[in-house]
Length: 262
Image (cartoon, rainbow, N blue to C red):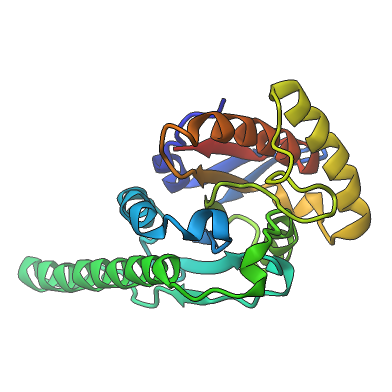
């Protein structure tokens, strides 16, 4: 079971990457990209108010680590019955240059750095609040009655095509991760029984994805995934099974993807 990802690792100056083809690469890190999926399906939306406190507590440190310099980007999509047809609901890029010390007195440089830090904090706070607003939005509709969680992999594949080589990308799911559509199977109607079944279903669903969704595993090489599951005593056993399922599924897409959870 994945442990909480140490987000500080994304700040290293160089990334040593083993691609999905096994090739060793050394690529200088440039910018951070954060892709957030917000589950709007009925199974999660009914507890959105309680979930928002849990989500905010985890998103604050994530934003602090992923938004640090000019060009860092945050994007968000919704998970519901038509995830692949869902346009991005939030996309923000931090656009303020970090001050340089050259040719400046200490007081001038300190003042510019203070202004930069204030701009950074304001950006993080604004983005964090917008993410919470989307989570707490009470709008419902036909799309919310189903959950196309697997569609998020196609969204990631498309998104990663916009991430330059050398940049880091963290994908955060705020979801119970339960795919609930007729194809390839409905995990609400028939929950996973145990971990062996979770692995078997992941392998079968990967085969379905290859035929029915546009998922390019080579784009997942420089990718880290963190899942924020809803908490609660009745939820924990299901979370463990779904975590095992998604670890196995991402592993089939690209063996180098790191998957962690709350």
